[in-house]
Amino acid sequence: MSVGVDSARSDWEDGHRRLVAAARDPVAADRLQRQLEVVLAELRRRVGGTFTVAELAAAYPGSERWARLAIEEQAATPGWARSLAMVGDAAFHLYARGAVDYAP
Image 1: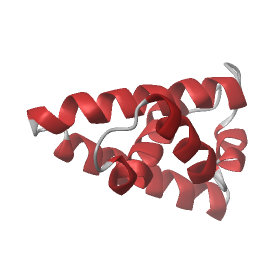
Image 2: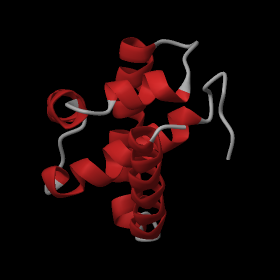
Image 3: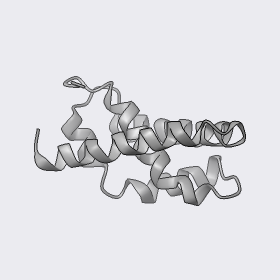
Image 4: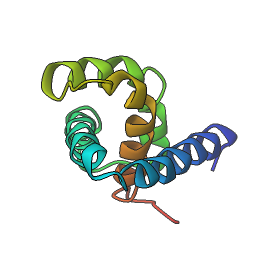
């Protein structure tokens, strides 16, 4: 893997850990899950169902812009902008598991 892909994967893993920790709060859990689903759906639309980790990493730069728009349109709740980066990174982490060359 390239340094860029490794760096992106590190960001994604960190975001996923932070999301899991934040979702321990039952009030936040539902809100975060909805936001996560919106970003995952947008990833499916943008990256497709067959992809490599490198292709997913190529979609990462600029993803905060389109994730912001998607969440704003479909899952905006009070304070949603504060969790945007965390949710986006967690979505990439989870989506990466479907890559044809995924290795933990």
